[in-house]
Image 1 (cartoon, one colour):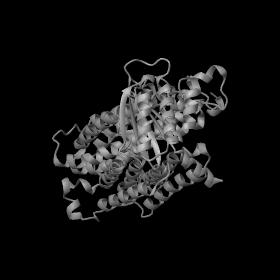
Image 2 (cartoon, helix red, strand yellow; image 1 turned 30 degrees about the horizontal axis):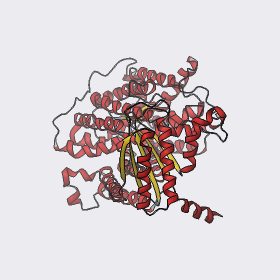
Image 3 (cartoon, rainbow, N blue to C red; image 1 turned 45 degrees about the vertical axis):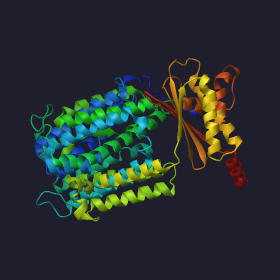
Image 4 (cartoon, rainbow, N blue to C red; image 1 turned 90 degrees about the vertical axis):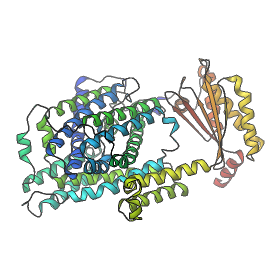
Amino acid sequence: MMESRGRADIRFQVDENPPRNVAIGLGVQLAILCIAGIVLTPVVVIRAAGGTEEYMTWAVFMVVLVCAITTVVQAVRVGRIGAGYVLLMGTSGAFIAVSITALVEGGPAMLAALIIVSSFFQFVLASRLALVRRILTQTVAGTVIMLIAVTVMPIAFDMYSSVPEGAPRTAAPVCVLITVGVMVMLALKATRGLRLWAPVLGVIAGAIAGAWFGIYDFERVANAGWIGIPTAGYPGVDLSFRPEFWALLPAFIFVTMVGAIETIGDSVAIQSVSWRRKRAVDFKAVQGAVAADGLGNLLSGLGGTLPNTTYSTSISVTELTGVGSRVVGVWIGVAFLITAFVPKLLALVMAVPDPVAGAYITVLIAMLFVAGMRIVVQDGISYRHGLIAGLAFWMGVGCQNNLIFPEIVGTFAGGVLQNGMTSGGLVAVGLTLFMEFTESRPRRVEAQLGVQAMPQLQEFVRDFALKRGWNAAMGTRMEAVVEETILTLVGEDAEAGRRLLLVVRKRAGDAVLEFIAGNEGENLQDQISLLGDKVTSSAAEAEVSLRLLRHLTSSVRHQRYYQTDIVTCTVRPPTKERQRSGARG
């Protein structure tokens, strides 16, 4: 295991405690970086939906309070809830469009019910992440994220011209241009550290311009108290489950799944920047992060505010500062908690003019759209995945803008397909399931995990190779993969009674072997990534199976869950390897 394979610039990794002044300083810095976005999102949603001032004040207070609680839970990990890393929680921009629709159609109480019900899907997703990994593909997730921009951008554009009566004609365009200009210029030209402050500085610049034109609401700030909580505005929860509820529920479930996928990505990324030595992804932490996301959404619904999700800002700051200690996450939560009970601080953000808020949302959603594209093409894009993404996206655009059979789409199932994320997401999921079910059928065999099952499993893969038209050399290689994987999974401390399910399928000319077992033992991918070029005599016996497995396969992936351990090995036929090496020569 070589230290050079890790991050030598990590000052304090996740399980270490930095000096208190360092931890508090970073916690406050991250809170300041994100508080504007956390507060502006519910402000934008409630203003766009025509909500009351009392409800907006309550929703802002509660959203900051929920973010404080869930940020601490993410850091300290309560049971199976929380990642155990610094994952800052904030309001989710993905919910902007559907939340506005829910407020318009049924009011704040129905919005609360939708958030509560959809949060349970996130808990299910966290506990059964291994079972849905083929449906929630990168193509599906990226497409739905891109469709969020389609639904939100018109709302942001409408806010550009929303100024008080009697305001100068140039007030709105100047505020928009200054806000967008500062954010974009800093994002494109500033140093890496200053880029993190681009959203905050953009909003500040826009607010100053708004004050110059007289459209910044100083009265709100002056009337706000220094310490206190809202005494009115809690909407309650509407449990009548009207037709509007059922029409919007699929869209909320889709967005909740998108939020979970975003959390999965953030929880994987934070692990890569929080340790000095290279480690494989701990999917227990991933599941914990998704469960904490679900807890945040449940608390948001019960509290009558907007849902939250993880913010990638904490990943950037951790990478920049080299401090990944979970203590920082606790201090972020403390900073949010203090802010929630200081109404004057919240009023400073709530007083921001609509054109500035709209400009901020425009840049935010534009980056979200790019993130969706990046997810779709992250591991390369085949013509199949390209067709799914393209067709789903444009079907979503057409339905969102009432361009595709509006008389049918508008009335089907209460108009559920009029939401672009729902219609496009359903197309993406449907085509993905079609691809999954029309592939060559996999073969499965179950056995007791142990060396005694090896002959049965080797005969199984040898028979699979012959029936798929591969030669004896391919069968021998697959048998060797079975042997080395089982030896590594069993280990010296294997517990009795563990079961193993082996699933074998043919994909793009390769054999994919999926070993599904219990979650005890070491992480296989972790060990493989840490193997060096040289092996000491004391470690040779323990590492030989991993080393052979690495050379027998074209890829090995190990995913750890609470109840399941999944090892996926892709085996390339020897003839294909020779053909490719000859082409390269």
